[in-house]
Image (cartoon, rainbow, N blue to C red; front, side):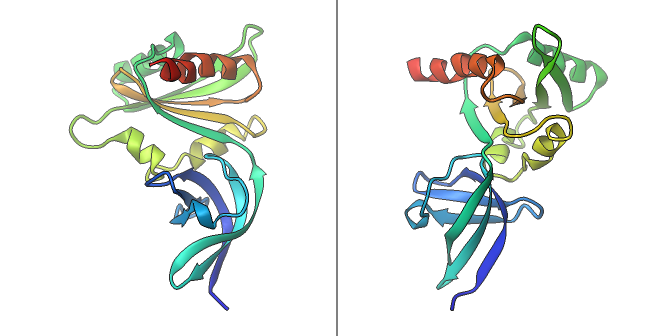
Length: 192
């Protein structure tokens, strides 16, 4: 009988293409598992309840249920930043703040997303990498969005050609805002 760890985890990209990072939701404890040892399909951003079995101190995800099919996208891009993100960052800069948030709305005035801009720290930290590697968990931002909307969401972490890292939480992953994000960032990356 091998020791096991049960918990709720968020799926992040691993350090290489053949592993996953499972970040425990409450404690943000990281566990890397080999993708070949996972039976089933994992997607970056999914929240799952699972059991990790430790075989000779090597973690293996033995059983899991996806409880929230949210998707995370991590991209470094030269694609243009939309005006709402620039405005959000400009407001933070004027106030002398390193971070700012704003709600985006559709043409009918209904909330369709939440933007966060995080000022880059020159010469010190790579905030984009910290988000991607789970060092700076996205869980608090997702939880805050879930206070007023129901998951699943689509979360975009973008290292843009601006002095900030942009985190966009799209509240409806099947809506027009998500389509715009895909066209702007995924299709641009595919063409380049």
